[in-house]
Length: 172
Image (cartoon, rainbow, N blue to C red; front, side, top):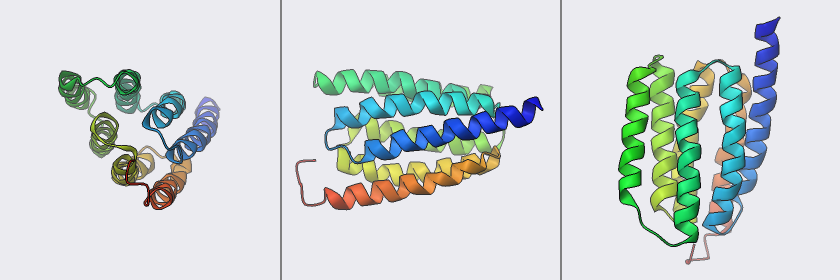
């Protein structure tokens, strides 16, 4: 019974993650996107914990920490490239120490796309690299049997829709 309860909890938390993440894609300013992504990541961590995917939990925890850093550096208009390098080292270390097969590789690829997007790119390009990250994450969800993860398709659609919506605005 415990396994079924944890799966249901994981599915519910996954739905909340997608709700917040899809909303964030339509925000115009980078700091608005990052703020809502922070909320989304809390749900991701909790859902991955429910599915007992510890390499995912650790990598998303690093993503969450870095979202706070990127949010701060964006608001203050700061550059901090060593933080990016340190995050890549942290992701690779987690992948090696918590290796769980293909699921770890897929989460690593998704994490790298997300951090590159958040760290260096403007919102329009964040949306584009987000499509790649979502494809890796969708595959990851299937490997850990989080079948509600199919909702990642809505994140892909949100990224494409928001990209098209802001296509005329060259500033973004």
